[in-house]
Image (tube, rainbow, N blue to C red; front, side, top):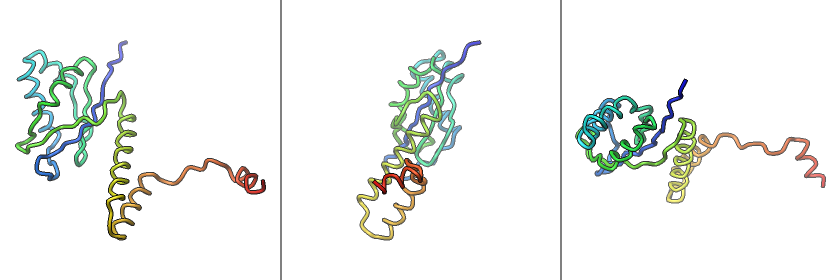
Length: 157
């Protein structure tokens, strides 16, 4: 039995006017399929139709799954997207991975970096505490590198 290898694209939607993007999964799929038909004809359309699926749609991030055979076609389509559902936007590829888990790890790292940069630009203590709380939620509890016995040994020496 042959395993189908997929690529997962983590893509950020950047609108021209700075507003929050509001497309739905079917609209994203339809726009990408329309571009595939324009650029590659029936052959490219059929390859992407069989393999492309929108896996996650978060506020400004999309995770798309593409079979390895349609990977080249999909990569050529992305720079040509200028609007989705009549909302002008550009798609920025953040990461291309082989599993959803690797995409999730990268997205968490990107969100942490965004929070840290927002913390640097913060001016009021109120927003600073909110951002610090968000960073603490993302990072979770600090890992315990040493056991209690090892900590006692270090403090005794």
